[in-house]
Length: 255
Image 1 (cartoon, rainbow, N blue to C red):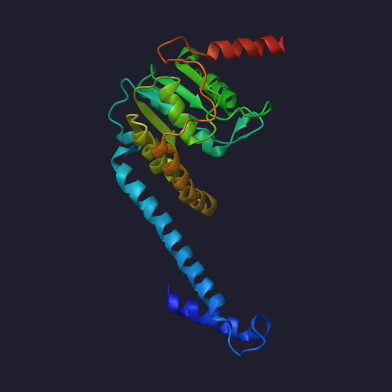
Image 2 (cartoon, rainbow, N blue to C red; image 1 turned 180 degrees about the vertical axis):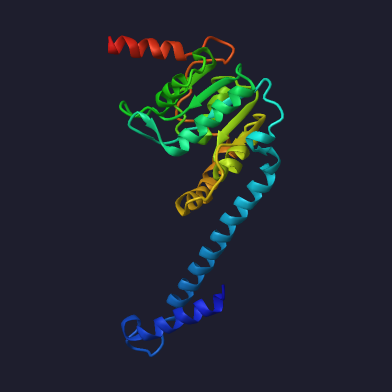
């Protein structure tokens, strides 16, 4: 980008409005021109820093990312399914792709523990329950599924996986555009983790842009070790699955 060209265009625009800006002179005031130039340089530096941060995070985590067919071992690992949107009682495409990847990993090791960490912040919106019912529909052992209803974002999910569920090693299941950020958070929280790509394809501009700004949030939260919205009582993965308790409550409401 030719920044001098941008400056020249702005300068011409200012001159065209000289009578409005400063009717006593034929030139715009120096103070206004200076403020605009400073603002532009700050904006340029900020955008450059955002892209540099993304590149740094990607480079620092690239050796922890695997495709399903390249994963060598899953021993002593917990499959973490982070939050994703739902429509009614059905998982959105991205969420479904993550769940389907879990089903494929269970074919390799059926005894893997699964932690569904998603959003249940509203009474009629329960991503965690939708994920549970999807897995049960595909004959996954209920005793291997643990539920986290307060995984409101990636940071909360990872923090709670260690603090509440006492996960020692994670295999995080998600799409490639979100991989580096989550692994960066896990590294900052001292959680041994690798990532299996649930889907790799064209990333929408919205998700691309969202990830750039989400990296800033991840950097601030993970380096300062900020506690998530909710913690609560311990539910170690070595205990009985809390899925049973949830299903009993659901059945009591229905019957």
